Amino acid sequence: MMHENELAKIAVDICYKIHTTLGPGLLESVYEAAFAYELEKRSIQFTKQQGIITKYEDIILDVGFRADIIMDKKRIVELKSVER
Image (cartoon, rainbow, N blue to C red):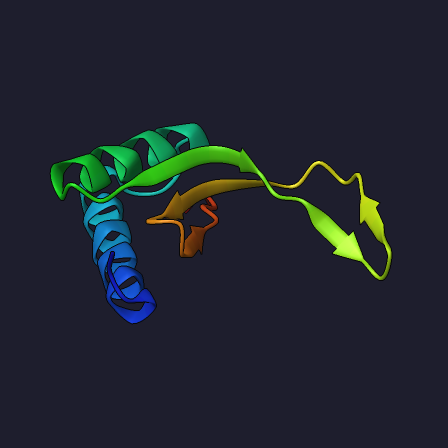
């Protein structure tokens, strides 16, 4: 398993590559697929659209939060898209 800081650097590098290759304005699902592809090329384990349990005091909040990508069970990546 990699250290969280190393995973963060890889995530930034991947995002930069995707941005320079595809540019802005596409759906988040396109960027998510490209990000997953780049992780596969690097043999980094990940999950997509994984539900996250949220606990507040003594209760579980049913808020339906899903992480776009979780890298190596350590780093959550939330992808956003903009028009330009």
